[in-house]
Amino acid sequence: MTAATIAGAPGTARYYVTGMDCASCAAKIEGAAGKVAGVKDVKVSIASQIMTLQVDDPAARLPEVEQAVTGLGYQLARLEPKGETAAAGGDEDDLPKDLSHITPAYRRALWIVVLLNVGYGLVEIVAGFIGDSQALKADALDFLGDGSITFMGLLAIGWSLVWRARSALIQGIFLGALGFGVLANTVYRVLVLNQPEAEIMGLFGAIALVVNLAAAFVLIPHRTGDANVRAVWLFSRNDAIGNVAVIIAAGLVAWTGTRWPDLVVAVVIAGLFLQSSWSIIRDARGDLRQGRPVRA
Image (cartoon, rainbow, N blue to C red; front, side, top):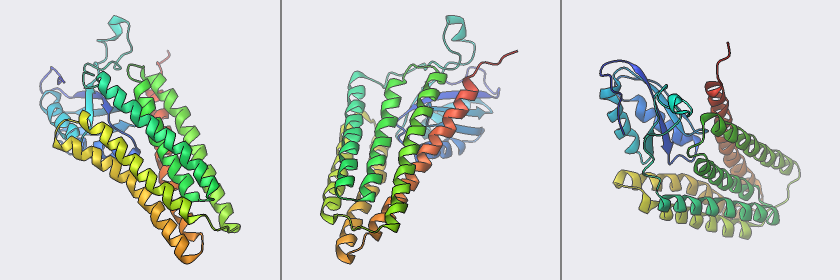
């Protein structure tokens, strides 16, 4: 990855980021880049997977930014400065200089992660209806969300900013609708209390934990360095927290004979999921405004 060529001159730098799977990932990257001296106005869009930042001295500061972000376990590819790609007929500021880390083996690993997340998300949401568990339904949305974000990242490699943003906007609206559906159904269940099947909740919650660990295992060979391996584990740990919460809720449902633990866990997971969906929609709208050509 290359830094800006004009030493000491302030400027805007843009990177394509791979490895993000949630809004907290974007916040983590913004925090790490923002701590580098001379860096201002860092913004990471989970919709387009692009980080944009203002730098006082790009030649000196960008290598530090790259080290800080890759140290968290994410991969960066510098985007072409404005004007360089337009002459070649491409979209300005929208072509990565280096995507060498996206090898065929890495793509295959990402596809496996997509299939694991989306496939089990569909299985778990069916189990949620069979077991009458709102927590399972909410956890299924988390699987579907993670899988769809990874899927979008795979398809959007090489796409223009506008098309990535359009794809993300549709995805964010769809996922948000699913999240609101779970919350609305949870509110209904509060009024019509039917106890869920604790055995089904515990079984599928445990399987979900195994699926998350399997996804991490698939990606670990494609992460270089101890920091990157730790980052893969952190991603899986965050998802596993929801799985463990479902298992604990199942135990409390069996112990107390009520469905309140199931409803509480459902609200928490669905709320976190909706927050991520809103981040996707917000970033996608911002990217669309940024990528829309200026008319005279």
